[in-house]
Length: 215
Image (cartoon, rainbow, N blue to C red; front, side, top):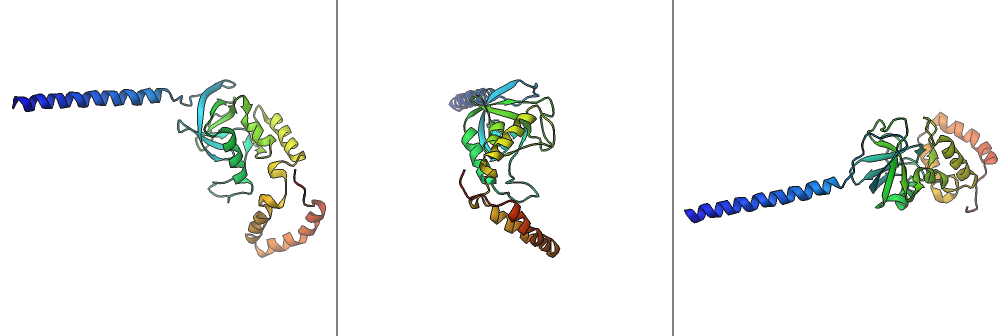
């Protein structure tokens, strides 16, 4: 009976020690994760690890927080209403090359720090590079013009540069899926809409000839 009691005490002690060790490891690992807090405009927060890229303007941090890149708008891949848009996969792939698995810093603006989907709205930097601006400059996203922000004019300039140099989504070649996208949209029109499109298509082709050279 005594041996059984001693054995029970030893087992309980070992379980307690094990539980305390597990708790310490868990809390220690959590303390190394920097949560996204209520931000101060213009201040850099981080570093955070970019764990996953959802599309060309949204990422998930190692903390589980979702971040929407402020001031840009990339082609949709997972919109609840809109279908996947042309150049969406390329945009996502380029953002993955820039940030996935890397440490980034977040900078918030004086406006909203979160959007309607509870995503943090931030400019992100990797090794000092403004990734938001780079997505626009290289033609993988548009400058977001529906709400003012402090880098609005800079991003509009980047978009003009990308458009002038026909980079990324501005390079209207057969390779970017533009034809397939037009066919899909044509199929979704009413008969009246299809007739109207036929009426203006010749003029569009005349005014905006296809770019055949690679840029």
